[in-house]
Image (cartoon, rainbow, N blue to C red; front, side, top):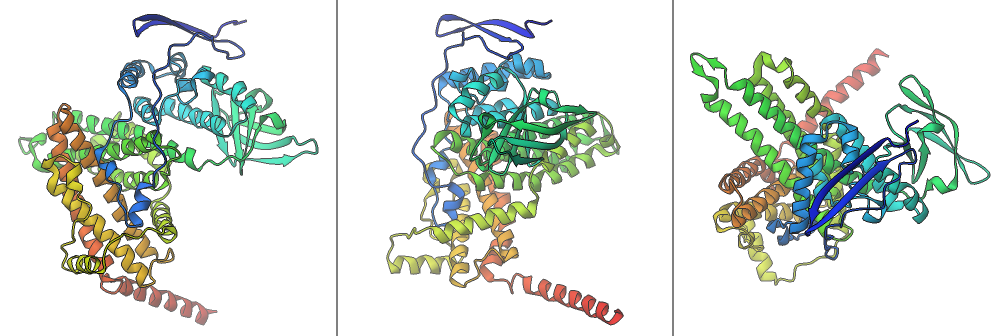
Length: 547
C-alpha cells in the first residue's frame, strides 16, 4: 500500500527567509499546512463600463490605451520564476501536481496559489496540448466551486483540488432526477479520464461526484443511478463569466501553438532553395512570416488587455472582448496556417509540422462559429446601446459641425487619443479615432433610420468586424506605446508593429465603413437579396409544378 503518492520538498528564499514548502498527496489528497508567504494581492478598482459595449453607446475609455501592468514587482518576480519551472517541467500531470499548478486559481486559505487571470494565462502558454486540456478543465471546476459553492463545499473540496486531485467538467452530458429526500440521481455516460472527481453541470446546478462511484465501461464512465446528496449539489451556477475567462486561457495557448508552427516553418525554410536562390531571400516569403508574427502579437495584445480588465476591476463585463478575441483568432488563424503550409510545400504533411497544425486547429474548433460570434457581438452591443441613457453634453452647433465634418470624411477628433500614447504613434492614434467616430456615427445613423435591428444580419456582421478591429488596434498601439515608454527590449519593433496593424486594419475597414454609411443599396446587399429571392422562388415554383 502506498501511504504517500508523491512528496516534494523544495527550498527558496523569499524576503530573506528560508521557507520550506512540503507538498504531500496521500489517499485523502490533503496538503501540509506549511505554505509559503503569499505575494501581495492585486488591488482592484471599482467597476467600470464595459469597454467595447460603451463604444456602441458613444463613449471610449481612454484609460485602456495606457495598457497598464496589473502585476506589482513581487508578483512579477514570482510569476517569472514559476514560468521558468513550467517551461522545463510541465509535460506530465505529476509535474503539474508537484508545482501546485492544479491550485492556480484556488485561494491561499484553501492551499491554492491564488493567481490572477493574467498570471494563469501566462502559465498556460507553456503547457503542451494534452496537459493543457486536463489542467484547463480542472481550473474551471475550481472556479465554479470557488464562485458558487457553499462554505462547507469550499472547505471540503478546494484543498483537495488544489493538492492535485484532478476534477473534470461535464456540461449537460447526463440526466438528473430529483428524489423525494432532496438528493439527485444522475444517469448517463461520459468519456473516461485520469481524474478523481467529476463535476456535472445541468442547467443552473452542479453536482460533485467521486469517480469511484461510476462504472468503467471501456473508454467510457457509466453513471448508473448515482445518488448525489444535497451537500454535494451547487446551486445557482452561472457559467457565462467563467467560460469567458476560460476562452482567454485557450487563446493564450493558441498564440503559443502558432509560434511553434512559425518556428517549425522557419526551420524547414532555412535550407531550401528555388531557382538557385535561397527561399528565405524571397520577399513574398518574408512577408508571410512577418505577417504571421504580427497577427500573433495582435492576438496576445488583445488577450492581456482583457485579463487586465478582469484582474483590475470589480465584476468586469468582458463578454464582448472575449468574443472579439475568438472571432479575431478564427479569422486570422486560418489564413496563417494556409500561408505557412504553402511555404512548407510537401513538408506540410510531415512531422512535427503536421502535428503542430492539428493542435492549432483543435484549439480553434473549441471556439464558437464565426457567424454565431459575430451575431453575439453585435446583438449585445446594440442591446447595450438601446439600454444606455448616455448623452453627450454639447451644443446644437457643435453637433451640427461634427456631422458636417463626418460627411466630408474629416471627423472632428473629440477624444484626443494621441494624448495618451507616445508621440511617435500620433498618426496611428488619429486613424484609430477616425474609425471609432465613424463607427459611432453609423450606430446613431442606423438607429435614427430604424435599421439598428438584430434581424439585419448583414449589418450585424459588418458592425462586429469593425468593433473587433477597433479592439485589436487599441490593444496593439497601447501595448507598443507602453513598451517604448518603459524601454523594453526590441520596443522599436513593437512600435513598427503597432503602426502596421493600424494601417492594415484601417485599409480593411475603409470599404466596410463606406458601405455602412451609404446604406444597403449602395452596399449591393439589395442586389444579392434580389438574386437569392428569385433563385429560391424559382425552385419553389418548380417543386410545386413537379408535384
